[in-house]
Length: 228
Image 1: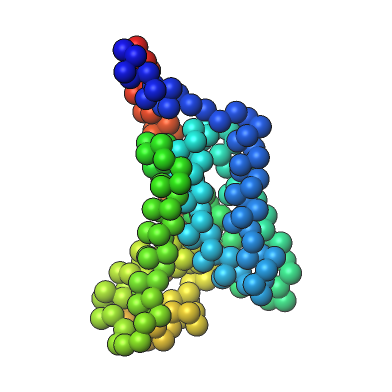
Image 2: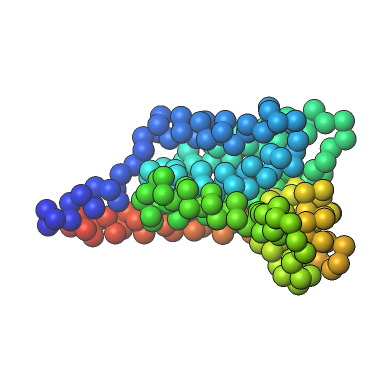
């Protein structure tokens, strides 16, 4: 039984309430950086959150933060940052930011569930950060020169981009025509239906939270069996 004791302790490890709150505030500040620097562009904030949200969730999940208590501190601060940024704009670029907030919270909880099972904070966060950056860059070929992807492939890659997902959930229905995507992805060559904000945001939140709770309970059960 002693051989399995370290694993059991790792599975049962929980970050305390104060540490959980401080970590949430820290990641909330990190995710909100583009709201205060870099031109104060709503789309820049969404692109940043598309990478940071799942990675932040994975980091907290691997540390054992309870998904039903302090885990949502960071996504809530990101919502405040986007609301303040939108209020400072002369013309709102994102008509439905609430659905975008639900979408990135769902991505955050999805990452939290993966991190909870992986139990490797840095590795889990880095892997999801790299994956999200790859999915964001692929529709535009990562800025490389050359012909755009074929129309059908470009449409699928846009659907898989977390940046496009968050933007369209936030009400930017023509995000595929955004200056960062229009020429690089060649969106004038094909038709594509945008994500539906209410359904997509709500579904992502439900799936992400459900997965995070399931992963947390599974990790706790595995630790209890190993400790027994």
